[in-house]
Image 1: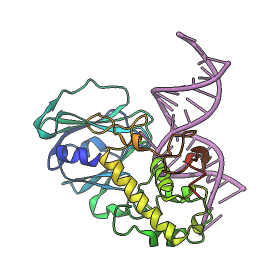
Image 2 (image 1 turned 120 degrees about the vertical axis):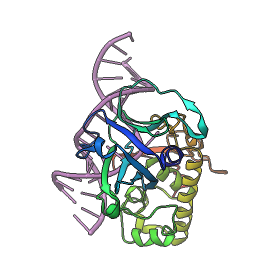
Image 3 (image 1 turned 90 degrees about the horizontal axis):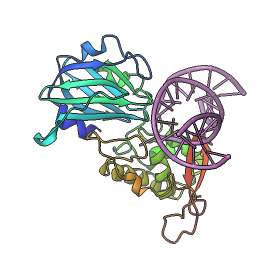
Image 4 (image 1 turned 60 degrees about the horizontal axis):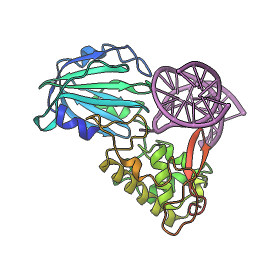
Length: 274
DNA sequence: ATGTGTTCCTGTCCGC
DNA sequence: TGCGGACAGGAACACA
């Protein structure tokens, strides 16, 4: 999403912002639309699952998509193309009009998304960001980090990887796919994984995320790219949403299973994930 | 401290 | 075709 938005909005002025309802999951901050009108977007960044839109007003707009949130670009598109604006649709909650003719619409059927404004100077102290673990694609994330964070923990590794304080930005799909690639059962206690297997896990996490980003994400139901197109990483799933199918690992004769852990579906191959 | 279960909201799919 | 129930990519919160 960041890669789709940056070429369209970075360096441009927000001419007008319309909040079509006062709240998403939580209330929008005081004066939301006014604070996002007549300000220039200096930078489009990301931390974990939060989009960070830096403004020359000294504030940063934080955006989380929740489960069903989309950021859709219309009007002036990257490369000088023009895509007609669409009529307002159900669940279009926030509309950004950008200098140069682009419009960005935040649509979120389930309204689990969030937006907030926070001073850029103290951004890392924002409650949603302060406790986050390292970026999985950054240098601070490696097997040694997992070893330290998993030490002594008896919680299933699936739950530990979904904990954003351990490593930032992994969701249910990418945890399932990474554990399968690393040959680790989602039920295994986090503190009982041999160091060599943590090497494989850290590498599997990076590989899954790299491939998923290149594919534009996974569009199972709700996810759309900023141009409205589907991502296609779902075609690369080896276990997620594949209960009853044969394991994709070469030479493995297992059958993918599904079980609920901590309220979320887990998918794994009992034969090659231990 | 560390773990699990519930909740927010709407849409879709499946079985009857 | 209609209806009820299960389920959905997240994360805050209550509680054991």
